[in-house]
Amino acid sequence: LDSIWTAGTVTTVPVVLQGSTLYVNAHSRPGTVSAEVLDVNGEPISGFTREDCQPMSNQDCLECPLSWRNDRQLTELAGRTVRLRFHVQGAKLYSFWTQ
Image (cartoon, rainbow, N blue to C red):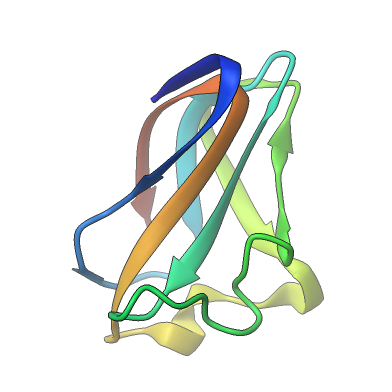
C-alpha cells in the first residue's frame, strides 16, 4: 500500500489470530502506519482500535512491531477470526505478520 500523497487504508480478509505481536515491513518517512483489529462484522475491537494503536512513524523498518495502549497483546484475541485494518499516511506498507 503506497500512500505517500494521501491517506489510505486496507482491510484484510478474515484471519485467525496467532502470536502476541503484529509486525509490519514499512517505510513511514515522513508519515505513519497504524492498525486496528476488527471483529468478523468489521467493527473495531475495544482496546485494539486505531486510536489505541501506537503508530510507527518516521522510520524505515523491516520488522517493526506495532503495539496498543495499556500493553494490550494479541494473545488476548488468540484463536479468534478477525480482520486487520491498516491506516497509512505518507508511508508505504509492504507486508505484515503476527508472531
